[in-house]
Image 1: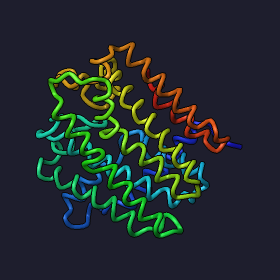
Image 2 (image 1 turned 180 degrees about the vertical axis):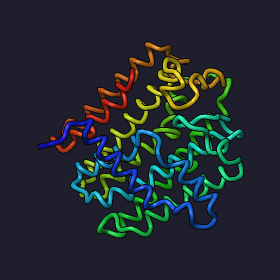
Image 3 (image 1 turned 60 degrees about the vertical axis):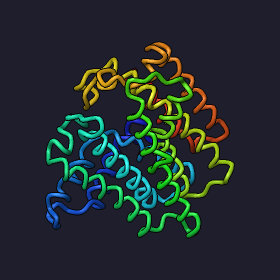
Length: 296
């Protein structure tokens, strides 16, 4: 019998936490302070949405869970590094992340910079040293996929656009372009990497990519709404930060209700993209619901 969604999420979150503990360098290994800070930045925090998307896509593709563990860990390490760097004084200058002091506050700026660098390189080390697909060429494509999603044509590029847009008014297409890169690229990569640990056709992969694009945008729209409506304790990070920093958001462009309507539209379109799949896509559908409906 298939477990209910909440049980599935809880089980995967708990098990994946142990996977991360085992993959990260132990704190007692030199340089101890750096390794301790890496573990601080990654462990015991976050909902692990990207890994959950990888596991759900892996289930759809009949993938070995041990293989998806590595792909999911690589994505989560990239995500964690991005948060460490985003929170630094030269970027968003925030003091709270996942309900605890940000890495540069808990340690120092130089250590936080090195934590981000080290987490990023560890992600690619994992993809290189573990077999994720029986075809070497496909696995090399998976490495390329994560690199593109993380770099100047993906997450880092989106962050650069975000920083350059402070105090400016963006059109909806410009805002979508920014977030397709900043937030969406890594979410799409999570879905695709999880699926490619198993067996999927090119047509199925295209549909999963479109699903990832839609749900990645929806994730950001909901984040913008929550930044306006939720409190700091609920978010685990400083509430209202985007408005305080005069950043363009879906709420500043569309208003609260307009942003809500957009999230609902993206949610519907994402579910329609999965219409051709059967029960094996159920977890992806449930995650789409969770992303859009979380305290919304």
